[in-house]
Every structure is written in structure tokens, then in C-alpha cells.
Length: 626
Image (cartoon, rainbow, N blue to C red; front, side):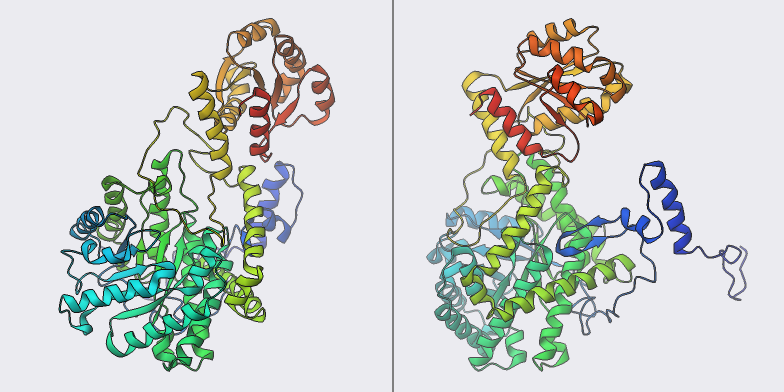
């Protein structure tokens, strides 16, 4: 073996350093070939991807794109983690949710989870889940000194908390051995229900916090749940800002009740959504810790008290009802992002979450997602693995600033309770969701299995219905909702007639000319539940018309290259109209031949970036599909 001398030798020593300007010039050349003229920084910006909150992901990050020093893991500002050892010793807390209202079935599911890798329980209690008085039956056989219990009882948090505390006493569990969180979250409950009377519940939550601080050192009393804002369509910065405002409101209430700032901070746990955008999830959790450390600092807390306790939950907004199996992939990426981002506890929602109550198979896959990432991928063995990434550090910094501005606006409006009552929070979240909904409709944000590559022949998955969510407060949105409405119309048509609505795809010319647009059109129409009937390379317009007449379709779409469109599209469109087509589409942008195609019978043009939902809704209307 040859040992190189320790003299600063570098394998790159003979190569000159590349500059950003050199890279930009190379980008300019590529863009010019694509018909885009941009120079210098503009060339770089042309490749940037816009995110919400005015942020963007740029194509290149270097040491020039610096961010403030994130510190060390376990030390302020806690960007790199709340503990010096991170999750490297035991991994993150694998916390699974249970919302069944039948105590026996809930108990079976709870014990199965605990026996197979789950380390804590998140119980939905009250009108959205398990009845409060059924807690003892649901927790029968659970070692409460080993398995922390986190309650989520909405407006019934006080009754649920007292029931759990009584259970500890009945089982003669030492109060020092009780673990978990009583889950009081009056402002989160108000956000979900629209109840504007939070003063009483806030005082009750503060009373529980005092009791926990004095008698139950292993219990926290309050949860700052940011999920209502995420589930209403909010952005990452809006989710963070709302959580900060809520946390500050709770700090004020708890210190007014007699706790020190350090004691009050120790009573809070924060819950955030983890999405399939792994880098945004990582940055969000890191930014949340940094922001909360700043709140603790200006509250004159001891430095170590500012470490935020985090519970990450895979996003329900991203879960789809069609092709739900793809949700397994989404939750795996989200779980990875949560783990790398430093979450203390992670909940992976079962893949059938959007369909109702999960079955045993779905729960097993959900808990095994964390197990594989921890035990086989060794994801927790490195502390803050994303730390030092120029991209992640810059995104964390930018997201923290955007969230802080939203938090300050809420505070100027009188705090979180006032901002909820006035409608400020709802208004801002709705505006953000409206922008995102436009991207979903245009498929700029694709949904695999729904807006892209849908499978019309899939067998539906049925589950027991879940309890209804509270009504009257912030809405609950899903990415697939517009496409789900279209697919439901198609399903109703299938049930009534025995067939799905169909579209005839006239693929002109050889495969090399039509395959791209044929695939595009087939995916587009299937996203609305419309079955494509392809006809490849009809020899004449008459042949295309005859094939259309026998297809059972009532609308048609031409698919080919621009060159072949110029030669054949007008004749084929006219023939299809004469054969009875109610509507004729052309896949692609028409350019200067738009009016000629329209005169020949082409009604609409479909292309990437167009409003797919509007097109599909209009097509179903033309077909008479209710």
C-alpha cells in the first residue's frame, strides 16, 4: 500500500477552481438551445423552482450561499437538535395514532403495535375517537410506565386528562413514572371547531400544567398542534408561525398561573406535519427549533430550556384515496425527512388513512416504515445528517425568517386567539391553498396515481368510516380533492351504465411522432375517470372516423407531432366531427395554426401547464356525466 505524505497533497491541486460565473455561462448555452435567452444570474434564476412563502430552490448552492452558524446539536439555537446525542442512542420515538371508538378493538390494535415496534401511543379521545370513559379498557394490558401515552381530546381534554390520571392512581403507578402528554390544546381545538371562547379552556390547561409540573415530572400537559393549519392548506412558514404564536400564548397563560418560564417551556410539545418534500420537512423542523429557542431567549429562560420537543406526523393532506398504495411511498419519504430533521417522535399515518380507519395490515406497514429506517437504513445513527448542507442550511434560514414575519403579524393582530377570531389566519391559509390548488389543477404539482398515471381499473379499497372531524373552524383540505370529484362522477356513470365515459385518441403517424402526446393525453383524461380508446396510425381520415364510430366514445383527441398536425389534423378533425364527435381536442400548443384547426373542427387544445381540472370537468359535462 502506498502512503501519501501528509504535506497537504490534494487530488484536485492540479485543477483550477471553477467559478460560479463559468457555471452560469455553461447554463446560458443550454438555455439558448432551448430558446431561452438569459445571461449571468438570470440564467441561474431561470432554473430555480418556486416554493411557497416566496422561497425558491436554486439549481446551485455553494459556500457563498451561507447561513448563520447553526450551532452544535443540543445547544442553542438547537437548529441541529434538542439533545447533544440526537436520536443516535435509541432512535426516534415511534408513536402511532389510534382513533377507534370501540375500546376492545382499540385495545387489540394498541397491544399489537406495542408488541411490534411502537414505543408510544397517541390516542384520539372524545367525539373524534375513543370515548373518554373507555380509556381504562383501551389501555388494558399496557405497561404505562414503559409506554408513554399522548392524548388528543380536543375540547374534552380536561375530562380525558383526569381519566388518565385516575388510571395511573388505580394501577398504583408512581407519579414519577407516568410518561407522555395530556394533550391540552385549547387554541388548536378552537382552530378546528371555530369556538371563539378559549379563555376558560386555557385556564383549565394551565391548571393541568401546574399539576404536572408539581406532581408528574414525566408528563407534559400541553400540545402545540400545528396540524390544523397545515390541514387547512397552510404553507410551511404559516404552520411554523401559527405554532409560535400558539406556544407564546400558552407560555403567557402558564407563567400567569404561577410556573416559571423554564417550567412552562417544559410543559409544551410541538406537533408538525412531515410531507413527501423531504428537504422542506427537514428545514421546517430545524427552523422550528431555532425559532422556539429565540422565543425562549427573549423570555429570559435559561439557555438549555429552549430546546423544543417535536412530534412529526406524516401529512394527511398528501394522502390520496385513489391508488392508496402509493401513500406508502409518500409516508416513507416523509418519515425519512422527519427523522433527518431531528423529530423526537414520529407518527407514520397508515396508507389507508384517507379512506377511514386503518386495518391491521396498514398499521403494520406504518410502524415498520420507522423500523426499517432505524434498524436497516441506520438513519438515526448520524446526528443531524443534513447539517452543513449549503442547501439545507440556506433553506432553514429563509424559512425561519418567513415564519418569523408571519408570527409577528399574528402578534400584532393581538395573538393567536384574536387572529383566529378575526379570520386573519383563515384568510391567509385560504389564499395560500388557492394558489396551490391552481398548481394541482394544472398538474404543476403532480399527484402520482391521481393526476399522473392513474389506474382506472384498480379495485376500490374499503375501510370502516372514521369519526367525523370537528366542523365550523378551519377547513380540512386534500391535494386530490378536485380529481376525486371528477373520478366520483365517472364511478357513478359506470355504476349506472356499465361503462366509463370514453375518449377516442387518434394517434397520427408513426410511434416516434405520436407516443409522447398519446401518453400525455391518456394520462390527462384518465385523471378525470375518462377511459382512453387509442387508435394508432389511421391511414385516412375516413378510417379514423370509422374507428371513432365503433369506439363507444363521444369525444376525440388528436395526438401527434406539430409537423404531422400541419399535414393531417384539419382533415381528421373534420372527419371526426362528421362522425358525431361532440368535442375534438388536439394535444399540444397550436401556435399560428390555431384558427385553421378551429375552423376544421378542433374545439380545445390540451397541453402541459393547462388547467386539467377545468378541461376534464367540461368534457364530463359535454358527455352528460352528472
